Length: 212
Image (cartoon, rainbow, N blue to C red; front, side):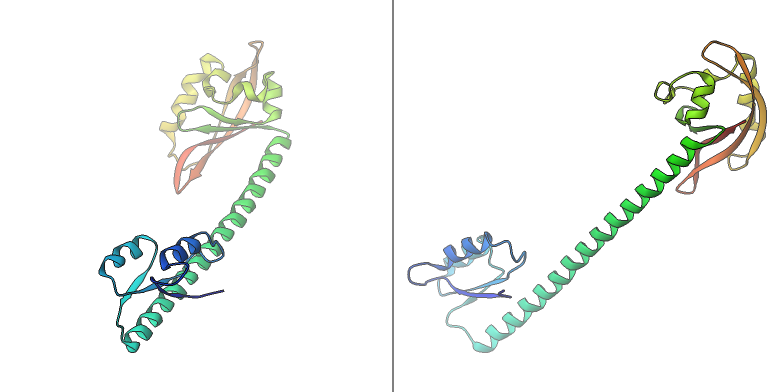
């Protein structure tokens, strides 16, 4: 695997520009520095546009050539280190994402299996989640309740009490209160609500309510 190409533009059969075009199709190395040797000033811009990283004018000084080669190899080494770090970081992110997904799946299984009601409510008082137990008690499918206002599940006479809770307590506080929830048939169902703050990025973004 070449680490660098020192390329003369004028060569028999295949010139330097054709070689650079061929190197572009080689995906084995994402960063192969090419230094072009040329005596034609007009070739310099074309060589850079073709993918050359540097050029040396003929006649050249051997010390200059060695210095430019050394500098290019250092740049390549740094690029490869950054590339490897990016790959490692991507793998870490993928592993962490998979781990978080596993944790979410487990948490969802626990919530779904809970033998009491559970509601996750956003800052606009809409249902983000209702567990199967609570949906069954109300008599409605889970999917039919997602995104609905939580007020729709409460007997109208008890709504003033519910709306007063945020004014009596700080957003980060937990509190309990009793109310009557409404089944699909309109019947009142007494319930004790234990309300806890829902946190995201250090801020309260809603409530988590356990219904017993």
